Amino acid sequence: MQRVSGLAYTVFLAQLNRNFNANLLIMSKYLYLFIVTLTLSSMVILGCARPTDSPDPLANTANVRVLHFSPGAPAVNLQINGSRPRVAPGSTAPDTIRYLDNRPYYNVPAGSVVVSLTSARTFAIPNPPPLSLSTTIQAEGNQARYTVALTDTFPSTSLTVYRDTSVAPTFETIPPGRSLVRVVHLSRNAPAVRPVLRVSGGSDSVRTFSDISFRQASGYLLVNSGTGTLQLLNPATQAPITSFTVAVPGPGLGSAAPTPGFIYTIYVRGLVGATGATALGTTIVRDN
Image (cartoon, rainbow, N blue to C red; front, side, top):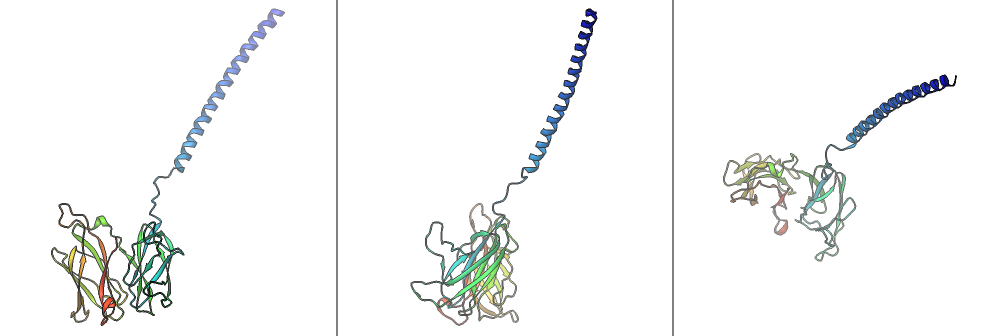
């Protein structure tokens, strides 16, 4: 009786061991599947969370500058979005802009950009007449460029905003020995004109711009880089009104490996019949 009971007990233990091993194998399989599933899920999550492209730090920025072309208007102090920019990094001098002054572009966040100008005291005019102007630009990103110009004669001075290089030509797309040029009409008492730019040499030596009136800008045209003549014609009769010597230099001219040219705006400013600083003339400013 004891022998049978011992044998049964041995069989029972063997069966119990087999069941335990089988259950352990099943649990191991489930654990393996759980670990594999968890690993794959983590890889998918991490893969989704990882950005595919590095963010462009310039994508959400724009550039704004101010040019003073209002005869008789006082010097002005500039604020952009409520802050006064400086003339140069580290400078403590405020950005005071006088007639015919221009400033380089200031880098600003894209979106709503408020440009404010108020009369500035100078050594020559310690008590200037009051002037307060403001305009808001809805600036696009990707380093879009804008010019805010003081236009008209004081006390009718106002602000006019121009989008520079609106076709977005880049430095690299301009052929060597060429420049992109436009003309802006900012002479209050000058008639509408048809600008013709003559720069010697090449197929782009003579370029005729679209007719423009006060505050209007022509489109950009590709011209030879160098020094030439800007002639202003009567649009109706083609008769010459006046002409100016202008220079639209391009880098690398005459070198063995010329580099692409620059982008310019020629501002026709001042007053017909005036003399001195407010006489009719041109100011050429680089746009890139």
